[in-house]
Every structure is written in structure tokens, then in C-alpha cells.
Image 1 (tube, rainbow, N blue to C red):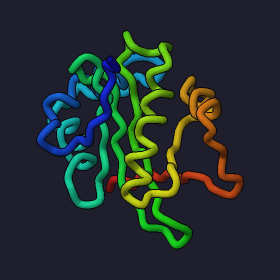
Image 2: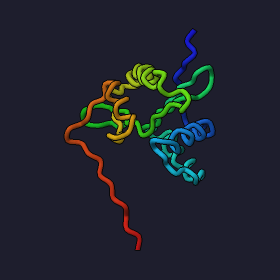
Image 3: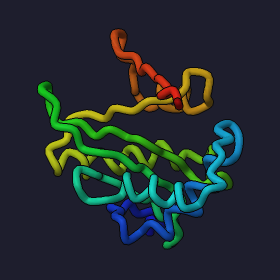
Length: 152
């Protein structure tokens, strides 16, 4: 019997999502400072709230081990699933679970009329090679730009 299940997540799941997200993204290679747990909870609720969000969890033997937190974007060329955050629990990484998670999500996305997946990652992070192996390609003319707003 298959012990892995993908289920859609919502704001009701924030208490299960928060510890996994914190565990993964506060460690290398990300080293994000999520010590402000109120801010972390708000960020996760931004991603999990129903208006346009589409989030999935990967469960192994009933335990949440993977997250795909994103949004549905209705673009002129088709409907996209924009993954904002994707992770597998640290102790479960390098076992093929991330690849399996993506494969299991695809039919669920197609059922909702979603034709493509878009995500961003750092070219120098291990996730870059992972996504390339999963069939993701770089968009030649697409770049993310960033600006801090100066404080007075």
C-alpha cells in the first residue's frame, strides 16, 4: 500500500505547516531568520488563505513531510501554478520524495485547469539542480528584480 498522500492545504493547516517550514528554511542552504514567529505565521497565512492560493502537503504515514505553497495565476498564455515555497522535511530529503511530490501534484493541477508551473530559486542553491532534473527550464527573458524602500 502506498504510504504517501498529497492533500490540498488551507489556512486551517497553518499550525502543522509552520514547524516544518521553520525547520527547513532556517537551516542551510537558506539560513532564513524566522525568529519572529508572528511574522512567520502571517507569511504562511498570506500563502494559505483561500483567495487565489493553492497549497499542497505531502504526507508520509500521516505525517506532513512536504509543502508546496503557491498561487494560481490566470496569465494570457494559460493558467499557471506559481510555487512560492516548496520543501521536504530535512530528514526526508535526498530520497526522491520531492520529485514524487511534484509528479503527484501534476494531475491535481490539470484537474483545476492549470497548464504550467512557475517558480523561482537561487541558481547557486541545491534546489536549482533539483528543479532542472524535474524538467524545469529557465525563462530566457525573465528576471526578478528587487529594491529595498529607503527609510526616511
